[in-house]
Every structure is written in C-alpha cells, then in structure tokens.
Length: 168
Image (cartoon, rainbow, N blue to C red; front, top):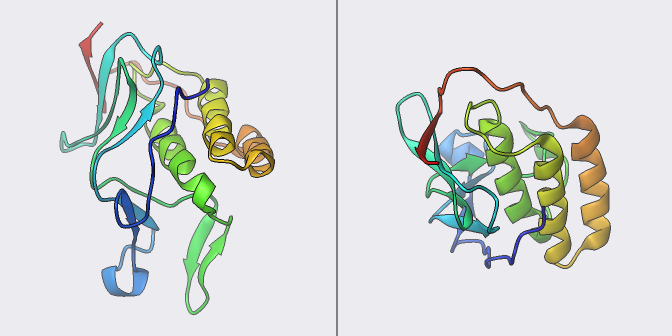
C-alpha cells in the first residue's frame, strides 16, 4: 500500500509540538494544526468517518485516501514516555517519520471499528512507504520491522462504535 504522493508536512504549518510542562498533555507529543491528507486512491471505495465517544470526527477514509482533522494528537513513533526531568524518552522521531507516524496512529486507533477497510499488513506497509518516500529508505526498513513485529493490532468489533459508513 504505497501512497500516491505525499503532501508536505511541516512544523508550525501542519502540526506543532506540545509542551508537556506548559500544556500538561504528557501523553501526546504532537497535534495537527490543520487537516492533513495521505493521498492513496483506491484505499477504500467507501466513505468512512472515525469518531470518539462524543461523536467528534477525527479522521475519514474517502475516495482520495485518509484525511485527519485539525486537533488530532499523537505521540510520534512509539514507544516513548515523558520522563521528568529528562523529557521524552523512547523511539526517535525524525522529520521523515512524522507524517507516517500520524497516519499509522490513526489507523491503529480505529482498526477495531466495524467499517475499517484495511489489514495490519496494509497499514504497516503504508507506514514503510510513507517514510521511504520522504527520502529515508533505511529508516523506513528499521521502523517498519519494528511495527510489523511489535505493533498492537486489535480485533474488529461487531457494532459500528467509533465509525460511521457514509457511502458504500
């Protein structure tokens, strides 16, 4: 599952770093500052919205690929934790891994939904290609091996909780 092409993904334009000491969001490291799209035609022939318990839509699969809403927070490449007084400790985030980690986190978060159209191997391969297309095939290979082996994939649920099928 290779993206058709990558959109630019720049600090302070598409995302910003959260300041754990000031903002108290030690669980997350980054937040989108506007909607972000990973272009992949043929990803789904359906339009599927992914939402939280309150009904807030955070992402959708549509005919152009994956779209992630402004305000979605993620932790970059996992695992990592905020450890006072050292800061973030764990997997290193490179500029080339940020878009891939965002899309990977969204996919893994909503993989349990009834309408989710992809398999773990598809999502992990998209992660690999997104990093490789960013110009770092060696990092892509190492990080892909890690998510392929250690990524926690959940079984789908029978109800439509957290996803809504709009068009099939």
